[in-house]
Image 1 (cartoon, rainbow, N blue to C red):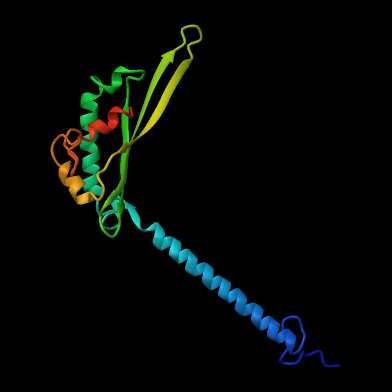
Image 2 (image 1 turned 30 degrees about the vertical axis):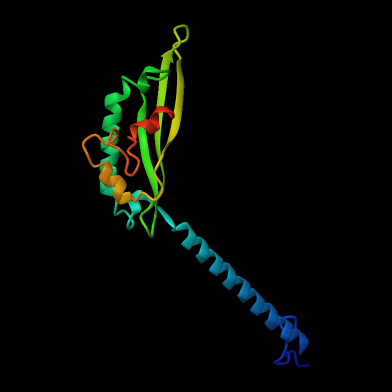
Length: 181
């Protein structure tokens, strides 16, 4: 007895129609895989439309300049904190991060957020336990439409960027914090 299948058999062992069905099934699977791969590539391209300001115009290219701006803003915030925001429920506000999204093609900024944290720690006199009250804030920075990262960085290049006017509208960055903190 010959256990060998005819050459035109499909994966189900059937000749003729089964072979055509098996080829169609393999072609369909390949087509679906190709479409999924193309959809994933489209998602990756869409995800790269905006980048962090630190990664504009290329990966890590803006890190040094943006880190310098963050340091100067932190310094300005520390200088005014005691006379302004730090007189409320919390006395130890800390600037955490400033992050901005930038259109990778045009350099136009989309959004900026500056995050802060603060806490109070009190000792319970009866038990010696420490009670912690902490909070974080995410403060949006209002940007004029179409302002570019280059304009933003140039406007805040002075020694006190927290009080420098933002490009195109003249509002100091400081005013964005008043309603937030």
